[in-house]
Image (spheres, rainbow, N blue to C red):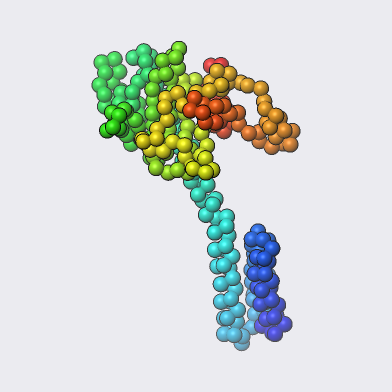
Length: 271
């Protein structure tokens, strides 16, 4: 590598690091571009007699590449991994509620009431219903203080109860100990509501000590599941964007929103 190529090689590195003074995004783009350009320089300037002399340049190129990867992971990668994990946890929580909803639809006609988790697990014997409808790792939990029955699957607790209001029943799932996870509820019509975490304090419900009351998520969307579109939704649609979900104020005075912004197939068939 001649002196001109060597000067260009290291000047590009210096320029790429200087762009951090502008913004991280621009610096990442410039570092990637420099990585490619300098690789081309190293490959095109091949000379067998200079094999040993090029080792420091390859070493500099490798260090620059490692810095590029490290900065990207620190700025974007870790956040994306964490975000993907939370989305997966949310999907699993909703899937648990929908499985519970299916199990109740099998059990309620037999007993004429909402079935307990113990009955759905087959751990509480009943003459009219004695079938296991929940997966084996769905645990039945009895709170030692209140003697109330809960379920647990993975990172979430589950609560199911009869609201005693014209056949309405509700079930909830909320995090065991991770304040970055949200809570969900489902009703007899498979209307699924989500309670996003608070930016200031994290999860609104966490552990058995702070479990939701059975009517916590009840609100206007359970009475009128097809409200008119809000101004924010109309503006988003006009701009070709995904509209925000419908929300309502629950009995717990917290703002619940419809999961994914749309109703399930079962809930649409019932109202």
